[in-house]
Length: 312
Length: 270
Image (cartoon, helix red, strand yellow):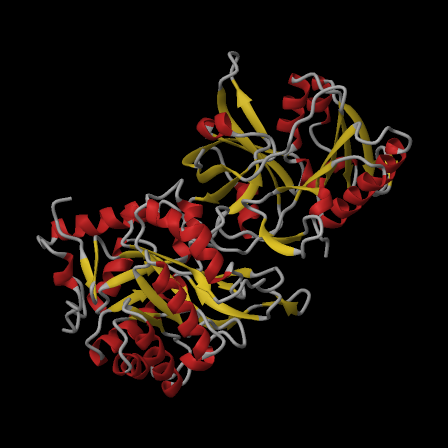
């Protein structure tokens, strides 16, 4: 590939825009047999609190049209075990490690961030202020402009690493949250987390997953996610990491054209763990067809001129 | 060894009943790596209403005269959209097949006996396990329970291998009427502890009962569980099951990578 697929998130230079989405890629090492972790733009590992968490009782997922609803409940090994057991191996594999940081209080976000910063070998902090599945999982910060600003500015003071709050789509105006994050010192924002959703088993009249409610992901949400990324791109100057139902190069490019600097892939990785090389090759092919040397030139290159009413 | 993703062709679809079929897939590379108890994640081409792959035990590893794998098969039972599609599949259709995945059964050798306990579609891992056990000279028995005579499959296959059969049906149309755990319990009575490895696959209540019966008779037991699974690789944390090790607190582990085969004594049943 002669073309330049690299992108920049604050001080962070990524060789390409593809990042494994948190909660969809374990701690990264689960996938080392099928994906070269160093070839990804970044690996965003599963959300971490200070301590281990069990998560919700199964069943935790249900399929819905062109998507799935999950309520895993942030099962996780906690930041200390992550730093001890996973981070050194991820660094050995050459992964650029994004850590999804969770907290039940602002202090916990700060503490987890400090542990990761002190450990070294972390590329960026993604702040999980948007998990829809646990009561104390940050969504109370992510659904309030004041709360979003408070978490971001507290974490901002605690680390030199890029701070990237992950925004929830379960608000009226997501762009105002991107703005609040930018004002509080965020280096970038990532969006969207999943849409709060529900599916009922009509035969039994009972929920399909134990938690009743869960987060909807997959291609079903993509057009809404694209719209939200576009809205945020007009509101903030900091880079946007876009996600929501990306399964191929076309989908990734749609987010990039809407204003995303990088993209995350989640659900599609469950269907095809070899998705990364395919999307990357497809993006490269697109650049070649359109005679574009640098992917970065496409960021926000969406042309709002109305389409022709009739195809010639 | 990392799994392969094979764009397999349906070579044959043998419908065994109104609900069950055996689908032969051109994935010899997967077959060559498969150890009994492992599974594949499959997705028929062109599924639009579902996204995720579905886990299936590798049912048979089909070999040519020289013993080289030429294909694998899966035992399918209609339950939902993907399994309906797999039931209807015609030769020539393509099915993405990722595997082999997961922790296999631990084979035993004589003088330890191998007793396989299957419930319904839980027969799936035992054709390959029986082949491996018989090849190693291990005395092997299959306890096999189904709803009725019409849903007991591949009996000739196991008989040809020299596997002893103990059959039960819920309606009494063949073998003993009732649950498969009843003859298992009687047969284990009086056997020296540790003399028999019990391998089980089937509905979870059956697995819990088999694990309890085995433990009561002092026999080791391995069970293969099936939980709602998203990715098969440990990425999504959907397929968790509660286990306990010694005095440790019970905790969730991913059945795709810590299983699907577990020591029956370590599972905390719902």
